[in-house]
Image 1 (tube, rainbow, N blue to C red):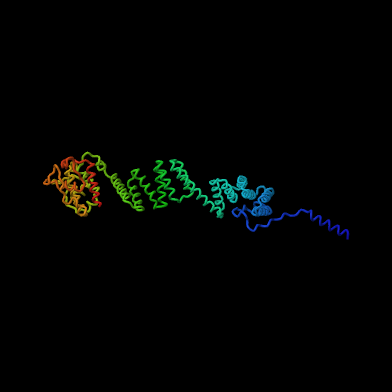
Image 2 (image 1 turned 180 degrees about the vertical axis):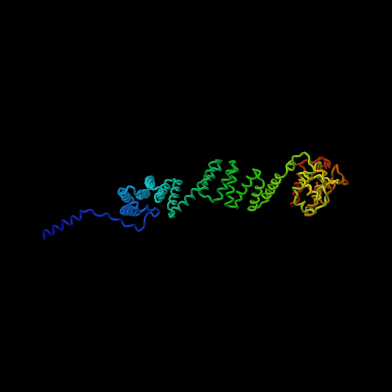
Length: 449
């Protein structure tokens, strides 16, 4: 009995001194760091027991004991030095202690072994973000998503960072633009657009900066991009029109102003449309027409061209008269307009069936043409004709009995022409190109009412 009792005591003592197996910590009821990405990997990377110890280390970290987790991850690396998920685990453990530099160090070691390892890229992004390195953090997060598209929580973080980055870039761009630092503003807007490429207003604001920098090509490109994204962007449409007009691209400037007027109707914009169209039409005219306003005198062909081009619709609606054959206008640069004004009865050929396109135009000749156009206007709009229906102005050099008095009186009473020095009309004085263009422009304005 004494021997049996002694044997039992020895067995109990031996059992108490024997090394106990490592206990696997129970998984916490609620992991403390749910935003962390578990550093998984291919099963063939290590033996099953290494993976098991790695899972135990992660569970320890999620329980809140980062120091114990450090020891566990270090033990895993001692067993398998190439097991990079444990390096990522050490990185996440450092994150819990806000040891950002060591966290980045461990994540970089994991990435040195596997450059597209998503858990390390995600953790590295967290560490960089905590250090205020937003751009680097965003790049790391984006690489993590590219490596593992299932990381939806990282994707939402990327969206937030992109928005914040774009907001900061926009603020910087606007401040730079206000301060006149054009190149800084352009760089900031370019960065904002990279983060938010579907934002029309960014392209428009960049276009405004481009315009201030004198880069009309870039301004036009960015304004057009803004309109492509938002066809109702009035400021971008206006900028397109301004750039087109500055480059004398009148037709496309007119189109841009017309688009602007459709979005934000205004009399000023409508006038711009007409002006641009007139300039486009003017540039398409023969050189002889374009030279009229600078000419010291005006020929009958030039006057016919002015009337025919500026009053085209009115003349087309007028009742055509039989002018007969004009033998001296074939091949003349103004032939189409000469035909239009003679058919409408605004100018006449001579009795010998000539038009004499090279003949000089005097103030009396212009008054007769003006008077006949006023008749056409009155036929379509009787109300507007009241002021020249029965005119009786006094001219120092033209009596009421003169054959040209009525035409001169109507031209002056309507405001199309004016008297000269001493209330004279001077019927025989040659007119200049500028005077002819001014008179026909006033007639065109009356015709549009």
